[in-house]
Length: 113
Length: 113
DNA sequence: CACCAATGCATAAGAAAACTATGTATTATT
DNA sequence: AATAATACATAGTTTTCTTATGCATTGGTG
Image (cartoon, rainbow over all chains, first blue to last red; front, side):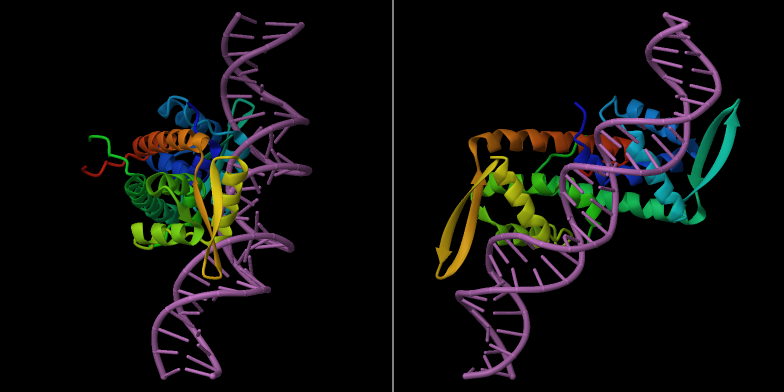
């Protein structure tokens, strides 16, 4: 099953930020692959969704980019800014809270720890 | 805290369907109030978001409407169609699965049941 | 009685966000 | 040699929500 894109919309940026928080430094393609791996293919980020989001986060000052060359191929590594670290915590907290609310609304039993 | 609207986007229709499943028959305004009550005000559906969604679900044949008059005031009651009941189950299952995946991705501990 | 808040529907215009499609280029595999 | 994978980017379209507005009824309060 691949999740309908509607579901991912609201959580995409938070996913990106969480991965950057854990891995310190990642490039776009790497993010798509890691999300795919971690979700067993259930979430497949398209480049048309990912790159604009990365650019938006960069414009907001939440992440910073460094360009590197691997041979002749360019890579843009992203990492959290100081402010980004704060914002990331806030976002994750909000999302966790939201999921708890949804769980109650939808009457879904939590999985065991 | 009121959740950022991004979060609600992907789940709005599923919330509507779940409430109709549990309550058999509801009208728009009633849905906004019930969501507000059940979430302690954390999710506030605006009419501009709700009514277009209801119309879309009706156009898809997932819900059906009946108009009633309470005095001179009109009310449109919605309920799940036969197909809507099937779709509702699917959607809830998908959302539950998605939330489980997000929980794993974001490394969030489940609340105790 | 006058006024305002709440109830109840609806839609138009605009904005936000992702999707599709496309483009460019390098590197690895077959 | 051809194809798949890696790696970036963006233009145009669509979807969806938000904001704003409109209309109308009903209930409560000063």
